[in-house]
Length: 194
Length: 194
DNA sequence: CAACATCGGTTGATTAATTAACATGTATTG
DNA sequence: CAATACATGTTAATTAATCAACCGATGTTG
Image (tube, rainbow over all chains, first blue to last red; front, side):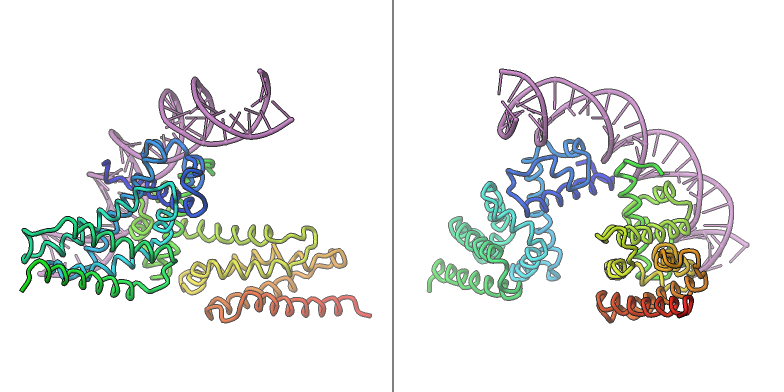
């Protein structure tokens, strides 16, 4: 990762933004390197200085957005060691709202299958596991329960984005948190009876 | 004018936009080259590759906006040889509305005196003279009348911008055109009596 | 007064982006 | 089929932007 040169950051971001903009117009398979270079106002060869092909570009673009989302969620949480994912939900929905064009394209494009899996994976590692590995039940983590909650989580997010965000981030964060908490309480009850 | 390299255009535009953004925050005299380079996300030395100092930058920035405004007004006029400035008024007000931040800063900053003069000069050359030099009275142009109408024109624009655009571009274009036409008719009557 | 900070302007070495060509493949079309 | 038009990668030479210094001036602060 060559760092500390503004040109690299600007160029990569311009290419990313061009791809995102084009994906709002047409499907990923119909987008060409020429289109991207024209939209980004860059020489076509410049793209190959940073990306092997358009699939590599899509891969890096996805990962960059997901990483940015993750840092955005953790950074905008004042309570540090709370391991409270409730505070992460609202920033996450706000991030989705802010980058609606990107996530909507990613979820709508039939040719892109890995994005949803990545999102689930990120939710698993970053959020759900924190909840299920609290001090009380750190040793008794249930992989199936993690998968269950992460899938439900992402499913709700997907519904919200595909339906053009009919509810506010605040309402969505509240609803999702209520359901997660409800299920979490049920897990605790069933695993430690009496 | 070194042309045909995208980097030059992008860099110059980034510096221009940084200056415009900073002028919305503080007066021109309090803006430093450091501020501009930080806001534009450029190396400080890069600015000196394009501009002698911040005054040269302001000069070029002003001229670029005024030139863009002129071409925008003429380009968005379908009727070619009509010499009808009425069609230019609405695009002009729309251009002002679009670049409100820039023009508002330029007119508000006490340290900038040449901008209003340039605007008047542009209105004179580009618009008013067309009106007053029609076939009927091409030889009998009145310099005082030109100055009169151009000043009135710019004064109306200045009022509109300084008052935060309280009326729509359509209404403003209509009002200004009515007043110009009224005065023009009066001139014709007084110069060719009977 | 001396130490310190900041800005303006310049410079040299380095790195990235640009242009304009390649060669190749793949459709489309007359 | 031949011609045409694009799209994909790659390349060499050129140019622009970057970084990290430098210097002198100016101004602040202890």
